[in-house]
Image (cartoon, rainbow, N blue to C red):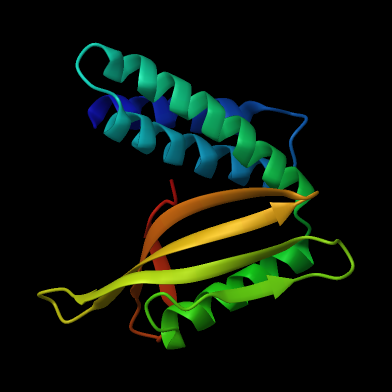
Length: 158
């Protein structure tokens, strides 16, 4: 896992230094790279783990960068509202969908597991998908309820 975090930190630094990326694209690159590194760490075995982490990081960063570039602010807000609603009110397995008719982009969120931590805080695992230009990208994540009632992603989607 230390290797995955080191690679993800490198992606973060490289994305932050890129002059051609806007903030959405930079954030997409970072989230995609971290998620890809985590996934590569889980998939890779033995000596192949380092290669899997590197490949996952690069692929995740590329996909995240593209999604960040293509999603506009209205998409982001709509996706966030749908995610908050699905995590707050959605039953496990129920799919909540969003669509922006102006951009043609859409997505969905499905809660997959719910539990209460020893501290009393509720957390949920979820699967999400975003469809941009007819291409769907899916990811998994974990979010926990904050004292103000909102849900905060505590593990990046991978």
